[in-house]
Image 1 (cartoon, protein in one colour):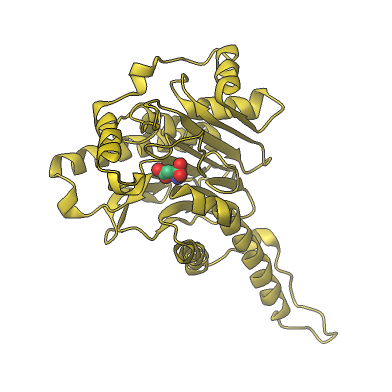
Image 2: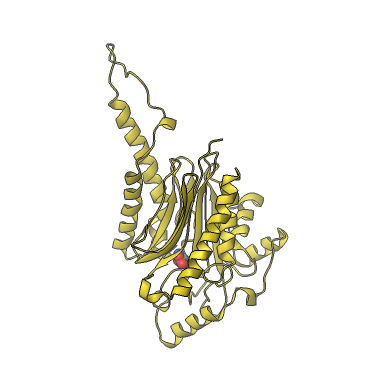
Length: 340
Ligand code: ASP
């Protein structure tokens, strides 16, 4: 076990600008993000798994009605809260996801149960609710999830005939990615989806490869934004794949440039565990995929963590609720685009 660990979180991206958020709300959000980061960091620092860390971190955000996940989830057109969540283990590529669940207090725990206690990856609707009961997960009545603020957003959307993008400043989905002291990466995402969603609409958040992905040799990703676009680009998987290919091609190039001995053989070999991608290469890959998302018409962002200790964000909205911490950097939380 090494000393290195890292965690990065988000609580949604959007038109988050200083003149649109009151100082009180700004402080409340930062406190919630700090609490979430501390929850995950304490687990990682003590040698806990990245899976335990992200599940506990995401639960704190699901329990906070400022975010569109668990309590405070947005309403469907029919006035219900239907939640989606997914989780992935980068060591084994095990994954679990749920869509349209209505009664599990913490949908991220249900996604985790699908991963660990079923032979499936993705359950939906009534079946997923039933599985939750069978697993003995804590249930909550509809009133627990419903908040006046979200109900007003639905009413405004209906009366003003505006889209779900226009009814709120932001996407309030939550997510976390962590790397533990064993180098295992885990990622998870939880959401209520989009205000006024109809017809059983499912976004990217519960889709492995779109809203969530983790793979120890490349990265962990959790996304937030206009889900339909993230699905079409397979954003989370796309970023991890590009990182994986960049890793092998830069390592191969470095190996090819190793000086040769008098027999023409390389003087030494670069092993994968001695090679790392540079920070700016990782950031550029994430930024490129988000730029492609923008060209398609999508908005939002992602958080990433890599096996080489990089943690960060990429988003094409004015801001994103976000935070990060690691064994060698204190926790920082940010909202606006011009912050760290
Ligand atoms: N990505 C989510 C969805 O499309 C929304 C969000 O990020 O808030 O369901």
